[in-house]
Image (cartoon, rainbow, N blue to C red; front, side, top):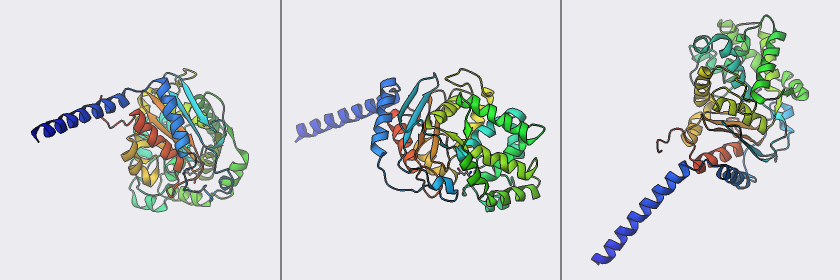
Amino acid sequence: MKRINSIFFALAVLLLITSSVMAQKSKESLTEANIRAVMNEAYEKFKNAPGGANASYIPFLADVDPKLYGIAVCTADGKLYEVGDTKYEFGIESISKVFVLALAMQDHGSKAIEDSIGVNATGMPFNSVLAVELEPARAVNPLVNAGAMATNSFVKAPNSAAKWQKIDDIFAKFAGRRLQVIDKLYQSESATNQHNKAIAWLLYSYGRFYDNVDESVDLYTKGCSYGSSAKDLAVMAGTLANAGRNPITKEEVINPDFCPKILANMITEGLYDSTGDWVYATGLPGKSGVGGGIIAVVPGKLAIAVFAPPLDKAGNSVKGQLAVKYMVEKLGLNLLDGRK
Ligand code: GLN
């Protein structure tokens, strides 16, 4: 009996050692081969995952093929990995908010964003009117519709055309190529954005809007209508992972001091009212858009971008979340995991 007990004990110790070695191993496994293998696994595993539906409140988005699916990874040292529909250009939507925020921060500094827009989580849907009413900051933060429209109004330029030029230029620097607005999406969104206009006017009434309301809402809507591919988004997010320098073109796009601030915004509000669930699972700053895109940033290491149109109730890509969560776990990318 004693002998059996000690055999069991030895086995248990062995099991503990191997599992901790395996856990250690998964943290050290950021090799090219592993990134590619895990990305391909995530692609296959969730290719036919059910659930979710295309956004339908913007008519153009309802008609995008829900089967499209692509994953792209861009490392901070400039390596790109792609699987699936990574070249398809879809509506960037709310992911644009991150890069307009970067521009406004570049214009005014990070303190001004905190003071004039706000940086706290709402815990509410991205287009919540209630959040504006309840929160003392009103605009709330740059990654919900209210704050994003206020952030567009905050961009420093003499007029709307000059603002758009600055937006277009910084997006081009983030992506490493000039993005094009999808005209049909822009029309579709402009014809149906009355709710956003109402929010913008409400902010104006509270003194939390910084330029012409209609023109600023138009800038926001146009920015949401950019066509971007999963590959573009991986490079744009990769620039944030690489402390503000585009990993492919090597150009410094934003002051490195601002990257942690932008990522902090993403970690508090990137997936709106389900950001808590997201951070609980990934420990990463992320950002989604109702076009089906999602980005996740691992500072100093890499960025992941996924495109798959069906969304959950909060407006986040279902497959996108599944794929990122899988890759984070397999590659040991959770920022909150202190194991070396
Ligand atoms: N353009 C969309 C809107 O204003 C963006 C929303 C989103 O992607 N969450 O509703």
